[in-house]
Every structure is written in C-alpha cells, then in structure tokens.
Amino acid sequence: QSFFMHVPGIKVVMPATPEDAKGLMVGAIYDNNPVMFIDDRWCYETIGSVSEELEPIPIGTAKIITEGEDLTIVASSYLVNEAVKSIELNSSSSIELINLRTIKPWDKELVIKSVEKTGRLLVLDTGWLNGGFSAEIAAYIGSRLHHKLDSPILRVGLPNSPAPCARTLE
Image 1 (cartoon, rainbow, N blue to C red):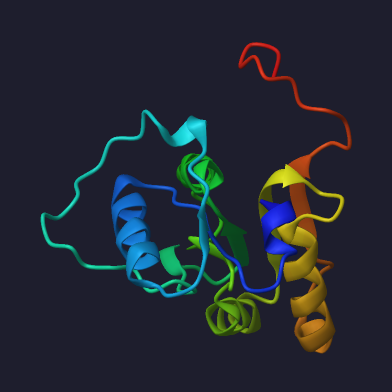
Image 2: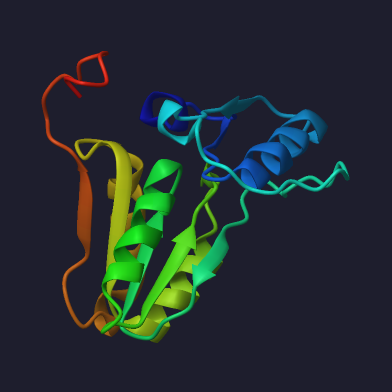
C-alpha cells in the first residue's frame, strides 16, 4: 500500500469490514480519479451485514469504532478487527479506535480531533514500518500536535524483513 500511497494522483482505500468493502468500492467507482482498492486476505472471512443500497463511503473519511479518552488508535484493514479484540480484552482503558478506511487521502481532521482529546496516539500499520503510512500519520500528527501529546507517538507494523507468501510462515 505504501508504494501506491507514494504516487501523486492515486487514492488508496483499505476496507476492514464487509460494509467498508462495499461502500468504498461504490465510492471508488463513482470517483473520477484512480483508486487502488487493497483488500487484505486476512479480512476475507470477516462476516457482517451490508445494506442493499448503493451508498458510497466518501473516500478520505474515517470512522470512529469506539470512543475513548485515554488513547487514540488509528488502524486500517484487518488491524481494525484485531484492535477491537484487544480493546474488548482491556476494559480498564478508555480507547478511541479509528478505522481509517482510506490511507490516501486520510482523514486528518478526525485523527487530529481525537488525538487532541486523548493526548496519545498509536498507529497500527499492516505493512512495514519503514516508509509506511504509519510514518506519514506519525510525522503529520507529531509536527502539529507535539505540544499536546502526553507521550511519544507509537507505531506497530511488520519488522524490516521480507514477508513470506505462505500464511503458516507469515
């Protein structure tokens, strides 16, 4: 996804749920610009309801999954679902989870508003941390909200090593 995110003029979407997949696909079809639709294989078995209407999700709009006061987590694709599981296990913290849905353009206003409220940011990246979209988000938020952060921005992603194709090895 970072390869495509780097190219000017290309929009990049990464759905986490069946509803996201349908709405972002409709949004991509209606959009007059090239859109890379990246559906991670780890989401293929995700089950969820989908409306029969052809309602597009506007490209560039994120969605708050859980509201909280202690920490903002920004994620996309299958890591949204993993973050939901983690939040359910950690009931002692008040965590705001943002499903980014689109990594280019990404919803800067929503993320800024959330980080201003919580003072903390954790970005979950499905790709490598080196040059990934989590670096872009961390740099953007850090340069604008450094004075409002209660702790350093943290990122979680793949280590800097090749990822094997086989799911068992991955």
